[in-house]
Length: 238
Image 1 (spheres, rainbow, N blue to C red):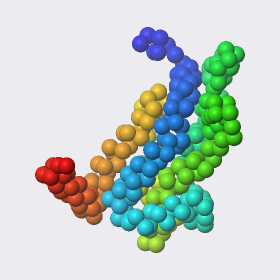
Image 2 (cartoon, one colour; image 1 turned 120 degrees about the horizontal axis):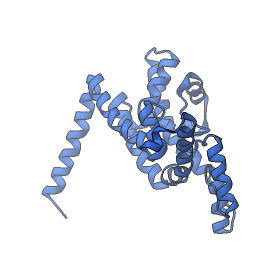
Image 3 (tube, rainbow, N blue to C red; image 1 turned 90 degrees about the horizontal axis):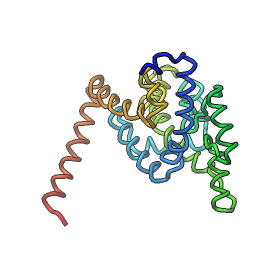
């Protein structure tokens, strides 16, 4: 505790960046480069989009297609401030602070590999498999899955007469807004992988139930259906 209290702001930020860099390969492997995660995440986002904005699956699917081809509505959404780091996002680079650079040099000098970006993962995978491997399609699918429900919400808001800036904000927050965090949570997120995503996931439920009567009705309908399905399966076990 005494050592932490005597650290300067730059030193604390340096250690945060080091922790972020070390956690980056875990984040990549568990999310953007994990097909199982992408499939389950698509289902969860689609459900959240329905409960919060009343978006139906065909609308979200059209959002996926628009995000994948990066068409006009995608460009409008990003241009209005809806982006969450498509060039970063899952693949956000750690800052080049002196402490981090020193750690990277030590790892490389000892024969290790610093994995921070999709290109680094690709090089390691190629060395392991001994062949040509590309992660670009998987990365593009992951970004489309994250962005699709947001574009659907953006389109809906614009259709209701909202400005593009307001519509982009609704799109960002139709599921989890990864950039929405306070100082403490943002700092912990450097050290604990997915900490902010978990916090925002729980807060998202509370905000939806607090702010929107129609969202409360949709959520009640989903919970009722899930409870009925659970009761039926318990009554007639196979």
